[in-house]
Amino acid sequence: MVFMQAAGADTLPYSLVLTVVGLVGFAAAVGIGSVAWYNSKRPVGWEDKARPDVVPEIDKDS
Image (cartoon, rainbow, N blue to C red; front, side):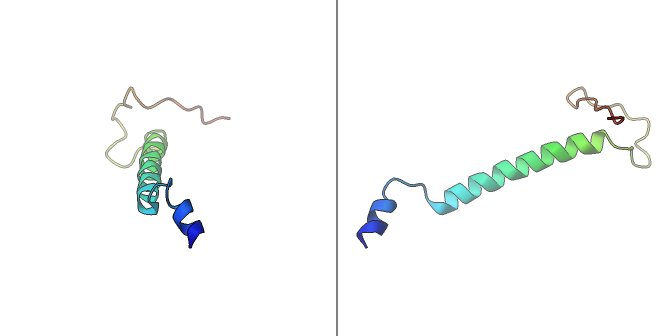
């Protein structure tokens, strides 16, 4: 009983940590997925669209 009181005194709530990790993971997945999509073959109808300046050019030969 004393251990549970001492352990919970200085820690963040589990739900807050889980929410932050989930949001950071989602943002990373969206960012990485966007770069991968823009560097892949364009879908039908998007072949002539310009690449955004924010997306880096990746050499596919390596």
